[in-house]
Image (cartoon, rainbow, N blue to C red):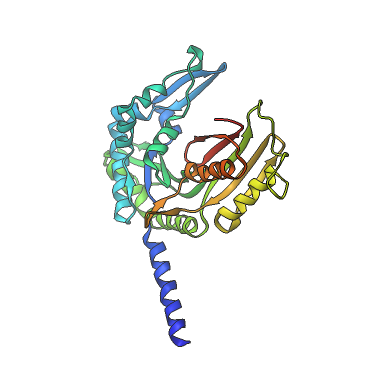
Length: 319
């Protein structure tokens, strides 16, 4: 009995250490506010409405200050043991496949922007958390200081999970690296602690995503149609699948009609086993499992689409 107790304690300690050893993958990007204020934007007409999006590619190509600021944040985070993805490198990869060119299309010319720049980057980088950076330089006589705002945003749910904001002490230096370090250094420990606490919650309770179920107009059934040997409504059968496949059965049905089912705060596992190793689970793969279930159990053809990292839509009736 004593040996079994000791073994259970050791397993619990091992699992705790394993969870704490896993760090969230981060990527630093300039905020929309910084991009707009500094003129790094994309503009297009969306059904008569002017849309403004950040032009990350041009910002990285033209702003030395941005590169220096992000490099400093990358370095400070690396010192805390947090792995980072390089946003500029991700953009270059996107550009090599001409995806960035598609972002410059507009509906006024008959073309649509399928994904925003941030969606393009997130889909490529697969970062867990985006660090969104904003700063301004303040001048009082010969002295300068830097006011900053660093937000940690969950890349899947877009929820803010950590924040640090403040102004550094005035100094005669005008180098952005010196000013930025002066401003943020005292905030890094509580900021990284918040990031790690959020990731530990994801590790234990699953990643939070949203999934929508819709139907094609010409499909002969709907979500109130009965399926299966137990003759149950399709919408209920789908909710039962979520109860069985989410972490601890955690999800919320926020809208349910005969034509649509909206499930939010869907907690999906952070990893799944593949050929004896752990692979990161994402929204598309999780929704693909539902797609296969509907096809196998009820012979329901369906089409899966995704938007960003944290939202998937399954359209029932055909591909």
